[in-house]
Length: 145
Image (cartoon, rainbow, N blue to C red; front, top):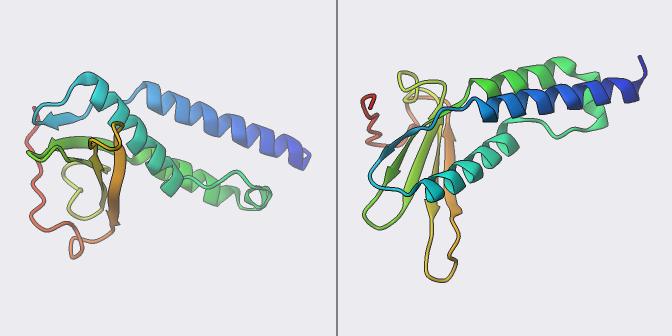
């Protein structure tokens, strides 16, 4: 197989997996009140940012390291948006990880805001932690709804 064919197959496979993942994603638990339109926009932004952080960019050199590409796709597929917390000041925190049971050991959090000057949702900050020593202080894992 030529390099071009390998890249095309890899790109199509990646797109198929990402598409399947997006279509099969259940709605996360929401703590507080959030309209379905706002939730959809927030989830879109978070998934987009998660893809940028976890998945490699499609580059020629990735053809030489297919194991890295496949492990990155597997890592992305294992991540789930677990819940969103709506705070009184309008901030929304979104938590993602493998599961609620493992979120204290490894996970992601995004802080999203909407204000009078910028009427659309935007990511104000985010973090990843790979150890319970650096997880957000006071993380409250909600029970299943």
